[in-house]
Image 1 (cartoon, rainbow, N blue to C red):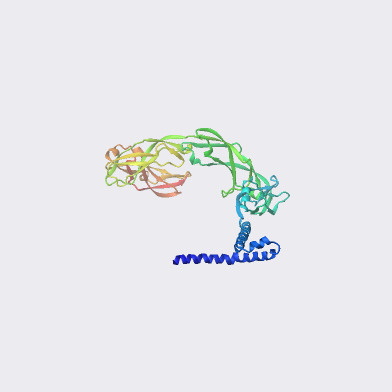
Image 2 (spheres, rainbow, N blue to C red):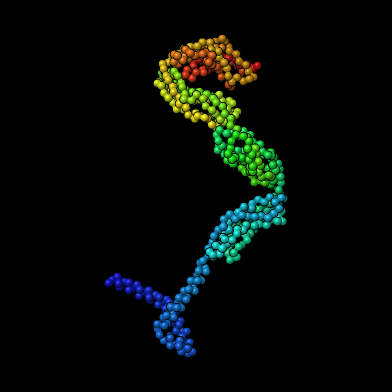
Length: 450
C-alpha cells in the first residue's frame, strides 16, 4: 500500500508540473484568443465552452512549440568538423630562375558544416592547395594559401593558411657522383659486387647558392634488393636515385640533373679452399700433452673479397685444453675472418687424444727478427745472442719426430730504435701439439742505421 501511495504521488506531481508549466499558461492564451473571436465565430465559441476541447487545443499548441524549438536547436547543434590531412601545396613560379624555401609541402584542411555537406565534399575530386608566387622577387614574403572550395556551404580552415617564404635566385654547379651499396647483406653470401660503372660520373646540382655550398658529395644509392635474380656476371640497373649529402651525412635539398643514373654492376663469386688448423689454448693438466688432433673436416671453401681471400692461407679452429687430462671431442664454430662472407662449413668436430708428456732440448736454434724498421740494421752482441736452446714439451712419439727446421725463435723489434737493447726471445713451431720455450729468456742486440 505504501508503494502504491508513493507511485500515485509521483504521477500527481508530474501532472501538476505539466499543468502549471504548459497546460495552464497555454489554456489562458487560448481563452484570451477565444474572447476576441467569440463575437464573430459562434462555432468556435461553442467549442471553447468544453474544457476537454481547450485541453486538447493546448496540447496541440504545446507540441507545435516543441517541434519549432527542437528544429531551431538542431540547426545550431548539427554542426560537424572533419580534417583533411596532408593536402598537397602547389606553388606557381618560375622554377628555372628561382628556388623557394619555407613553403610547406602539405597542409591540413578543416571542414566545418553539416554532415551531409561534409560527406559530399569528401566524394568530390581532390583539389590542391595553391599559392601564386608569380612576380615575387628574391627575398622574404608572407603569402596566403588558397583552396578551391567544392561545397560553398562549408567553412574551410587551412593549417597553416599563411606562411613566410624566402625566394632565392637559382644557381648551378657540377659534382662528381660516388656510389653507395644498400642492403648488401641481403645479397647471397657467396656473391660479391666487384665493380660498378655508372653511365655518367658528373651531374649538375641546382639551388640556392648557400645550399650548393653545403653539398659535400652526391651519391648513387644502389639497392641490392632491386637486382633481379643476382648471379655471377654483369647486369645493368636503371633509375638509380641520386642524393646530395653534406659533410655530416645529412641530405641537402637541391635539384640534381639528371635525378637518376644507370649502372653496370659486375657480380663475382671469388672462392678458395684452405685447410683447417686447430689451435689449442691453455695448458693441459700437469704431466700431460697432446698426442694427436683430428678433425671431421680437413679443409673448407671460403667466399668473399678477392683481396682478402688471397691473404688467407688457413682457417683456425680454437679449442680450450686448459686442465685437460684425458681424450676429448670438441665441436668448434669456425669464425669468418673480416672480408669473408661465407664458409662452406661453419662447424667442425675436433678430437684430441692425450698422453704423458716428455721434454727434449734442441740446441743452436738461430734467433731471427721481425718488425725491424727498414732504415735500420741489427746484429747480435755476442755468439750466445745469435742462437738459443729450445725446450720442447709433448708426447714422446711426437717429440721424437720433430723436425728442428720447423722451430722458429725470434725477437720482435717493434718500436726499437738505434742503440743496444736486450730483447725477449719468443718461440713458435709448426706442430700445435707441442709447446716451445727458450732456455735463454732474452738476447742482446745492437740496432744501427743502414
